[in-house]
Image (cartoon, rainbow, N blue to C red; front, side, top):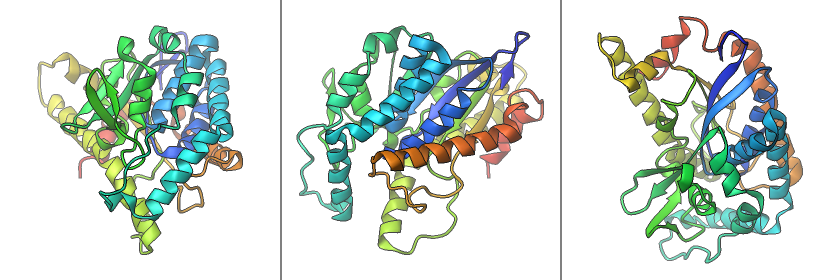
Length: 328
């Protein structure tokens, strides 16, 4: 991670969504937030990644890195205790088990059960005024375009839109536009982070970059299908950025975006295996399950830091390593 003369580490974060699997990201962040000298310039999040991002930003504004750790823990404990949230996931689990995704006659629930939790936990004025730039991704229904809410556009509605799965809930309307879960368009979105301060970008995923084996059981096939649907946009953006970085290296004069790309140090923390296959359902918000995911994320981040942390963003060779990784 980038260090200046005062040993400060400036980091940008991109947080993937995935229901209760977002508790894995909680654990990763809990470890990262203990790095001495850490400063976070911007966070981009989608769905449960947006909730993690908002909790981190709100907590940091109130108490720095330790405040962010506390806020993340409080949010996920609130998820576990919130009966409406549990009902939401249960309804979703039933919908998936009934192959609701493929049933056009199934009407979404009329009430978004996340609303009381989101409105009760997050202070929008705090999120808007934080020195950490928060970017919340959603999908515009009419054309499938990525919409990123930031600054004065941040709201409870934006957070709800980012996590609005259409087979469960009606679209969230903001200024006359309808929005669905951001996972369709950017999970997470990287573009908003490119020009933020710092050269180190850490992407935290809740699904592995590669499948261990081809799924055979119907439940596994459905789970992997959902992962692919919500991970394709991110992989495409990674490849597009890598290609743009390669083109920038071949030019003499560079735009501001190209200069940012050439300085970028990108790393990914992700589980080695699918969390669902390990017994952690994305619909299970019982506290012991969330804590188990948190512990897995913490251990994964700790192992990653031991291997990469001290050199992340410093070594010259790291500048292009991510480019080759995502251009096949």
